[in-house]
Length: 338
Ligand code: V47
Image (cartoon, rainbow, N blue to C red; front, side, top):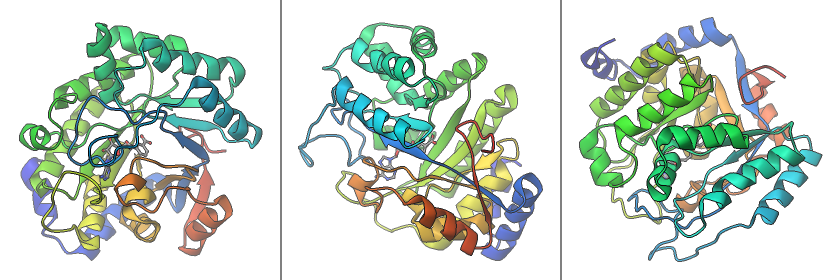
């Protein structure tokens, strides 16, 4: 589908879009809805960059800077390992006061003590920051990740690829092409990653479709994306003023259209943290086949108003999926069923 055809999909009524997306979802995954039992860790919120949409980083509006020591992080990992949790998702701000070793030694320490834990860490935005801050090439940073035990990359930092919008909402952070190049190089190393899209702020429908097409083209070359994750913009405690809040219908349409536009990305994740659990459950009928996981702690979106600080209790999560007519299936970080 072209940009024009993609934008025209929004003119279809929501039920037609739902049916189209659901038929693709059914063909790929039947009634299965994937989740994983994971723990998010955000080790620091001190950030050199200023993204207008971000409420997480310590700034004049939210002056609450923190940086975790490796001991503190290892304590958390020890606790989750004892409880059988298989994934840590580690994303930090762009902290220029901690040094290169702070970023990488923690992965080595986790792998040494808990080799069975999958480390999903470092967004393309962090990789770009580390490369610029420490005078390393992107290849050198990616090699360091492999060497220190990072297993896969999360999809953060993609925001919206349109250069004009990107410049307005997060000037100075990794460029759109930079984000895509970093993921391409990671995929060339035989590794997997995810891709996000931040929507519901100042972008237009056309910008969303353009974003999806750029991802689809990269996926055609590498096949390295496991999941596409449309993130709904959370409005509180930040510097991005949005006149009109996105509606539930527009969120569901975008979810369905992403399933239709991205037939080559196997999983569409409805991240309940930003869509609310209620809409995430409905979005299972609009193309989404993955609801992320229990998360346990969440700092980035909850700072901006999402109701996710303490994650979700597993039994409750499974029951919600079951009661909405789908089959909850636990997966590992690379989408192998457990
Ligand atoms: O890149 C920041 C987003 C992302 C806001 O790969 C906001 O499995 C909404 O990428 N409103 C980080 N979103 C989170 C992320 C992620 C989450 C879950 C799973 C995966 C995965 C990746 O959070 C950032 C940014 O786009 N974000 N502020 C906000 N106000």
